Structure formats: C-alpha cells, structure tokens
Image (cartoon, rainbow, N blue to C red; front, side, top):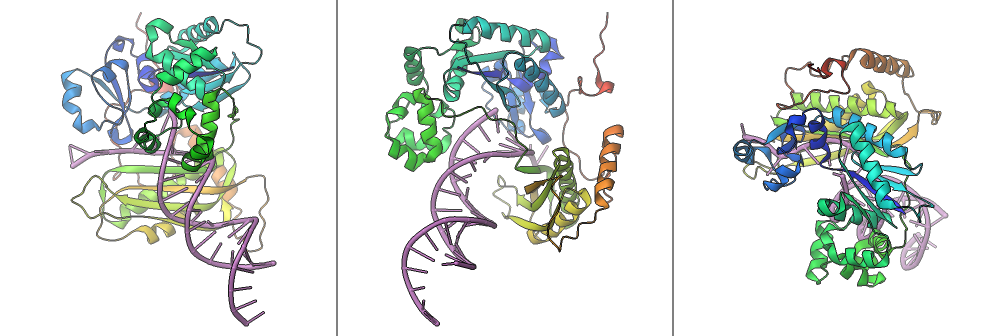
Length: 418
DNA sequence: TCTGGGGTCCTGTGCCGC
DNA sequence: TCTGGCGGCACAGGACCC
C-alpha cells in the first residue's frame, strides 16, 4: 500500500503558521519578481484567482477582497518542508520526498491496519508539530494514491482529508470520477488529444489498447495505464544527486546592453557553482540562454541558447563564470530587449573522481579557494562575490511583500508578547 | 511598467564509425 | 572504392511534474 501525503496550499499555509490571524482569509503567494500567483489559500481559490494569475492583472481583485499577498519566501518553505518530512519519516522507513510539499510512503504488512485511523494520526501529528495541514491518500499504486489524495481533498468534510482506496469497487469508482486531465501524468497536450477521441475519464483511458497508448503517450503512458489498473510499476525513488542544475531569472526590466546581462549571467554561474559544490559534483557542460519577453508582441522577439563543453570538469565559481561569459557572447545580439536569462550546468562527475585527460588545465588552486569562499559565505551570509557581480545597484528582485524568515534566520525570529 | 523557476524523462534526427 | 545497415552518441524539442 502506498500513501501520498500532500501539504494543503503549502506556501500559503506556511505563511499562515506565523500569522494565525490570517486563518480564514484569502492568501496568495507570488513567484519571484512578484510576477504571478504560485500558491493560493482555499479562500483565494474561491475568489476565482487561478494558478499562475499575473499579479498586475489581479491587483484590483486583491484589493477589493483584501487578499493578503506575499512574495515567495523559499528559505521559509524549505525549512517548513524539512520539518514536515522528518515527521513523515517516523511513520515509514520507505519514503520518497517527491517535491517540496509531497511525499510518497510505502506501507508493507499493513493489510489489516485501519488505514483511515493511521492517516488521521499522521495528520494530527504533523499539524500539531508544524501547523501545516495535510491530506493523505492511500492506494495500491503511486498513481492511484495521487488519485486517492485528490478525492480526500475534494471532500474534506466527508473524508477529514484522509481517503483509502482499498477495494476494487473504490478503484473503479475513482477512475470513473477522475477527469482524464486530472490524472497524474496527463498534461494539457495529452488531455486535448484524448478529449477529442471521447476519452473523458481515467476509466475511459484504461480501456485503450496498450499499442495505442505506447504509440501516442510513449512508454510513460503505458506505465501509467498499468498503475491505474492497480499494478504497481512505479517504485519509490531514492534521492539521487541532481543531473542538471539551473539558475534562471526573469528581470524586473529589459536589458538591451551587454553589460548588465554579463553581470547577471556571471552571478547565475556562480550560484550554479555553489549548488554544485554542495552536492560535491563537477560539471563538464554549461549552457547559457537569453530571451526577450514573449508577452510583448510589440517588441522584436529573439532567443538563443548556447552550450559549451568545458575543457575540464569544474565547480569553481570563477571558472564557470568565465565560461558562461564566453557562451553569452554567442547568445547576445544587439537591438533586442532581453527579459530572461539563465545558466544550466550538466554532465556531472563526483568530486572524488580524479581528473583524467592530459590537456585538462584546471587550476588546482581553485579548489581550496572555493572552499574558503563557501566557508565565509556560510559564516557571514552571502558576502563573498566575484568582482564582476553587481554590488546591489542595478539588479534588484521585486519582493515587496516578503515575510520574515522566521525559522531560518535568528534576526527574524518571532516575538511573543505575553 | 508588471506573466516563475527548477527539474525529469522520452523521442526523433543527424552524424559517425564499423 | 562504394554502399547499406546498424549501434552509439549528441542534441533539440516536447511532454510532464511541482
């Protein structure tokens, strides 16, 4: 039996933990740059604010209904997530942290357990210890556990946010109840195609022939079909090191000049290097991209990405920055207003693996240098930067509604008035 | 003025060498 | 020397997830 545990409206709930007066009030959390809504409380959903709603388009509605607006505070959410996950770990040794707000748990030998009662116990503990409300769905496969979770969430009164799909009847009922587009793994494209064929529900989907599914939805679709039929083919996945690391941002304004883009790209590359060092990897491939604003049909559009194979694997911020600027030269074109850029590093080798190749000319002094940089940045906050980085004059992310980092920064710790 | 960021996996295509 | 078939690889693009 699998369980999918999902935190309700996670980012909004995190904000609420530290502002309990907001219970029952509409909350939205905005993306970086305060661009669009990435999380909404139930009250905000009820007002008709969709996922991804551009903030500037919904400004009036926010004001009219006194919606509490927050800039995304990822350090806070990451820390809260960690707390929730450590509690979940105590309920099953077999756990896959699937995303910041979701985890799959596997329960073997629980066939005669009262799953509902167990789920309620988990809910109670997580809420008591973190203030985060969760929903639990039990089912024989991961895809069905997702579905069970949806049911629990859809009928909170009836299910008290815990649902167990523990019989064939319930599985069939759930398949017939779930619209095809709401099935885990069926996105917009597949939904449209299936819809046109008259496939409206998950139940319709599992009636399709294997060959057709494989041909049009690839092996991934076929696995999904099996899962929905009740055969577990997706296992719990253990955390592995990332295969790619990206740092990308939209800008608060457009950049037509090369200079500010250089600064951004250099900073992104440095941030990639920090993430690389954290997982003890070195990268052998670096991609830089820059795009104009696709929403601005009135401006000339252009975008390009350029990939460089590095002459040697490295995680030095200075070296990656240098290569990134080289790649940027291939990407940049005069006469365009760039709105977004990023750096992606791929093809990793572990730190421990000695470098091979007689032409590798990595400067070995970089290694202790970067270790020192990481140590200083850890001790004193992110202070050590490359000279090419912006000291804070040009670049500023819009974050007008940022909440304090209550749980990760001592300066932001909450004050309790007695 | 103002529309996120960070990932994964799979497939098709073109090229290379055998 | 030319040709066809095939595997491996790199790469781009497309689909998906939260």
